[in-house]
Image (cartoon, rainbow, N blue to C red):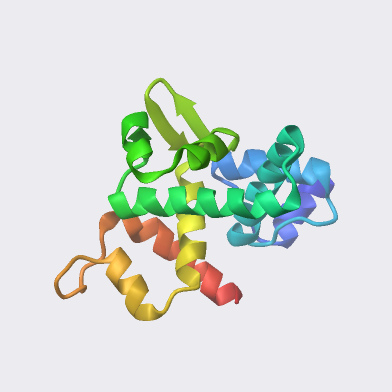
Length: 173
């Protein structure tokens, strides 16, 4: 009953209609019902932190190394958006990432290694992480990343969802 009251009182029904968002919202609710997200951006941030913290605990990753793990994950996410893909082959990943970065990526549960492919558990994870990276960039750098040359007037379709999340992030800040 408390679960449904929270959903209704915080007007979050729309963004938890996605099975991915709903499943993690329930997990967060069961884990810490006092600290629940009120926006999609908060939900994604909490989900990623929740999963990363479990990975860090599982592999006993020290705090200083956790920073490197997060940077590598963000680099992977951003590269997916830059290349306009939702998955890459292992052959492609070794051309962009070092062996140590690949070992880091293999330990992250938000990234799936299946057959010869590497992809995120859900596209919204790499879109969110890309949006977070963009949120720290000046407008002209953002424009160059998300739009077509030479005039940078038309947005690349792969960036639409990321830009939606970026707008939410910038609004939250």
